[in-house]
Length: 299
Image (tube, rainbow, N blue to C red):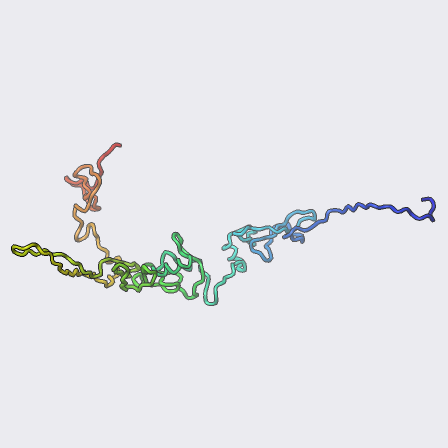
């Protein structure tokens, strides 16, 4: 209005606020400038991650990258590497051990293929050492022998014994001492021998009633019952001696070699190539071809 003394008319005012887009630093990005001569740097707290020199709107900056869940960043070669290789040069990257005092972590704490019968049952009850599993990791006593010698098995988590000292597993899931005899159901007698639970039936005595016919002169036949007791011979239950290699017997060509009748085949070429000629020391003679040969067939 030209009249400055007159009051101003009331009216609405609209204001458009237009701001420049704000710049935010993405999560995991370090804004400090980096050294182009060393484009990669190790992460200060995470062995799986590293910092890479990357161009941004503000120049080159260190940006957080990762090697994934299965690899570590190697600060010497400046590449992603296997965890074991990185732990050797950077022990702080080793996984934390949760073993109690006096115990150490072992990748093969349980050798599943070298367990006594009852101990195998115990570990499987814990959900370990199922078919196809060779090792189970875990904590072991620091003084434990890490390996069990040939011919020996683990009696428990710390004790390695010869096979004949192993405890077996009964049919009722009970431990059976080596050499111990157990009577199972249905008169079955079992014994723990060399980590094998050997059983046989027929160790019980039973009374069998038989009928006998008696002829009297000039009289009808009268059938009278008679009581017969059947006695079973109980086999020896003494554990046999351990069968070591020096006690092996050559069954085919030993002091008492197998007879020719022990060899058989589905067919033979002719008499000169009989199955018995398959012995390893068979020589070619006028009556032997020196080996077994099948009959020729063209099917």
